Image 1 (cartoon, one colour):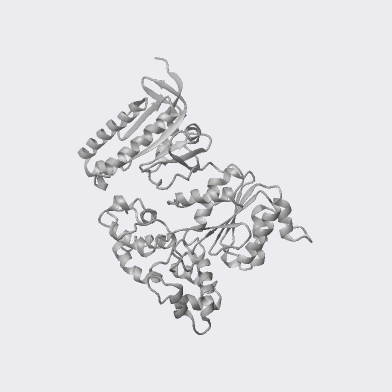
Image 2 (tube, rainbow, N blue to C red):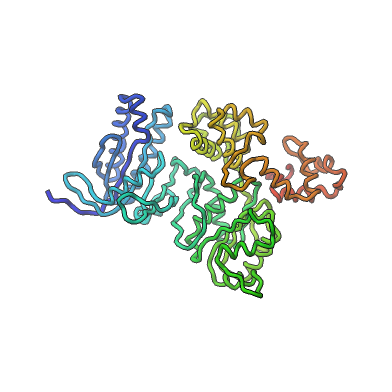
Length: 514
């Protein structure tokens, strides 16, 4: 029989941890795989596809429609997720699914060609419980179903000549999609210097959507929040998502290493490749170079050079109408036209008892701890046995990303119960972070010291005196306690407001307690 050439959407799937499951209980695993194949076949048939092969733990199907293939894959993962929620974690059937579309050959009910091979590679690169699609597939299905897409970069794939763009599909119940689907990114087509993420980005879908919307309407947006809350990661993520809107690129200017505020304009010029002109101020050179450019500049970590950043932002925005600035700082720049976005802590249960492991996975802080802990100690998982301790750790650290990552790094030497107990002395415990990070990002105490050192004498005095309060305070209580040597009673309100702006004091929604 002669082979048939056609274009088809290919779905490739396999069972995560197949060898481990077979080693633990081969008969039970075989029954589970048969049931999973049956479920997959039902979904394939319901979406007008054909199940081609079910050898071992793998499954291969083809579809005439890319949309039907995606609909099938998402529906299958969602139903498996619901079934798994009813089972012990160790015995769950979790699939990885890859989708691609392209030219294939069919002979004797078997499929051949690069399109089939690529679907299998995408499956291998995908997330457990997730769906990974090729750039070709993404182009055909985007906007056709209530899902979002997260660009996962271009990857060298064995036996395929060019790097392949891939996307993770975000849907209700997918491994990372717990927000509003704001993560709808395309590859950065223009120039950029954004760093390649070395660890996964957890949650923040609502924040990404909100920041994207604000940047669409305003030219200067400042992400404000205390050190360690994740302002830099959020800004880089948003810049990557919005890159396609700026034909001249997106550019990250890292200001943390600067000790001289006068070097802020030079730092921007260096990143943009703008050369200084003899006898001409560098700011004027930047204004001329950017006058007709369409680009996004991320000024990262401005808190120790706030005045210089404020002046540069004002001068650039006045001269370059198509330039937008995304700033990260512990306090606003106070520049005309600036909009501030307070970055919140990662989501946590309101109460101390939020159910078992399945329920806790809905919260960003828990997912961050579990993923970073698993990277440190192979085999670490969230279970009903350890979930209460993990919750206690994340609540004790108020959902702060850096503190959670530092705590998770200890799982290779301490149990989660021991970590929770030792957080009473958190400055001693939460050390030894990423050695490639700035020193103040490697230990919680160093982070607090950095914020404290940026305060003036009066602000430091007020902050120390406020430390006597437990559970918050009112302005009237602060005036009684704080006023004394070095601080007049009528100065307390202004100094308190300055500490709020510097992200060292927070105010409740009603504005009556701090």
